[in-house]
Each structure stands twice: as C-alpha cells, then as structure tokens.
Length: 230
Image 1 (cartoon, rainbow, N blue to C red):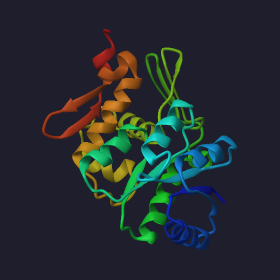
Image 2: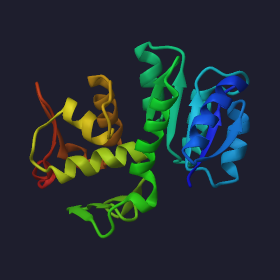
Image 3: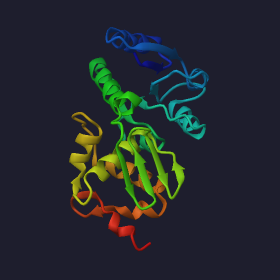
C-alpha cells in the first residue's frame, strides 16, 4: 500500500489522520515540522505528503518550496487553519496538489488522498498513451513531458491538467468542468484555482504555452494550431 507522510506539529492531529489512513490500509510516517519532513523525504519511499502550513521551525510553505527546489515531486495535500485566498494560492503556486482547511472531516481527507494517488501513482497511468504536437511530447505511461527535446518538470496536478486539455483538443472547457475532471471529485474550489494552475503550466511549455488558449467567458482549450507558425 502507498506510504503517507503526515506533517503536523500537533500530535493529536497526526494521531487522528493516521488512525483513519491506517483503517484504509495505508502505511503512515510522521514528522512534527518541515525540517523533519524533508529528512524523511530524503530517505525515499513516500508516495504522498499531508503537510500542515502553520508549524514552528520550518513551516509548510517553506517545506514545500524546498521540496520542489530539490526536485522532490511527491504529491502534497496542504492543511491550513486559514481560509483566506492567499493561503490557498500560495500553496497551489508552490506546487501543492490540493489543500484542506481545518477543521476538516478525516473521511474527506482520506478521499482526497485516494483521489490524488489515483492520478499520480505509476500503476494508475494508462500505458502506451503518447500525445505529440510538434516538439511537445506527453507520455502518460512514463508521466513525462518534453518540450523541443528538453524534459519539463511538471507537478502531478499540472501533468493531469495538460493531459486533460490535450485529450480534449479544440474543445472549450469551462473551469467547472476542469475542476471536476482534473481534481477527480466534487471539488469545492474556485475559478482562481484553475487559473493559477494554467499559469504555472504555461510557464513550463516554452513556445507551446500559446497552445493553451483562453476562451473568454468560458475557460480554456488546447489549440496546437496556435503555435504551428512559431
């Protein structure tokens, strides 16, 4: 079973999450701050991180930033006691895959863990599916993206978003539909969530950023013809 790293400075919260995850047969490890979490991640074997934002020493957002700067692309679900838009977007822009606001339902958290793992575990990817538009190559089996021969480092959520857009080439997709399909459950998110991920995704695609077109009043669509003359 997948191994989940629970990072929170409150033992009571860690025990609560661990109990629900182990009931669903997940293996769990724990850390009380971001520094300890980074040390555990450095040993490998972690499939997903549940990461609290507000912690002493090394907080969650700093930990997430250091993870991504070190090339650790392990999926992350942020826990935050704050519901302000800044906290949500800071985590998403930092490379988090999802966030849950405290107080939370443990069952909902487990459902979100399963949803993220369904998208990111290698065994869940569809083998043999390769999309190619010019120099943009996306391989679902190896979970890799190449832009004009260079490997692009996408978070799992950015990868899923790109695949969904490419699978629906030329179709205008509303933000609501993107949230439902890419986030893989009834996601009570905001339009800014999609917009933020589109912005991050475009930043990885070089000249192919133009292939992700904004459809005003609707959402986005993948239109590779937009870069054919570039």
